[in-house]
Image 1 (cartoon, rainbow, N blue to C red):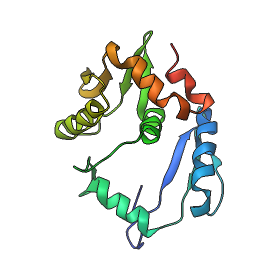
Image 2 (spheres, helix red, strand yellow):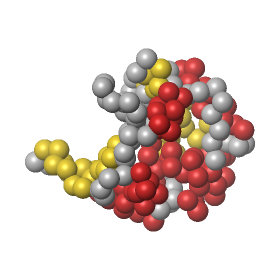
Image 3 (cartoon, rainbow, N blue to C red):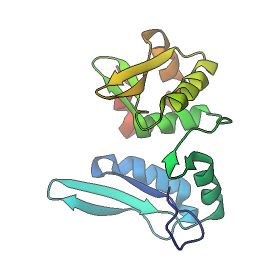
Length: 168
C-alpha cells in the first residue's frame, strides 16, 4: 500500500510472481470494484515475470495505510485482530512450509516488539509459536503441536494453487 507524494489517498498494488497468477486473480476478484483495470503481466528481467494490478486511490486505503505505517515503516497496531480468513491471506502472502512440515510466517520486516504482538495474537487462537532465526532476522515458526490446528483453521480459505504451502 502506498501514498504517492502529491496524491491525496493511498492505493494498493497487488504484485506477485507470474507463478502465483491464480492468487492475484483471486485477490482481483475481491477488489475489482475499486480497480480501473485487471491484472497484467510485467517483465522484471529476462528470467522473471510478475503479475499485478492496482486499486484506485481511496480514503479507506489511506486509513489502513495510517494504521499500519508510521514514518514510512510498517508496524503492528496494538488493536489488530485477525480472523481465520485474514490469517489464511497472511499465510498465502508471507507463509512457507519447509522440510517435511515446518510452517513459518515471514515476519522479518517487523521489529521484535511487533513480532511479539503477532505471537500474542497467535496464542489467542491457542497456537504455540516462537521466533526463529532466519539468517540475520527472526520469523515466526509454529511448533509441531500447533501445525494440525493451524492447517485446519485456514485450509478452507486457501486457494487451490496455494495448498502446497500447507499440505504435508
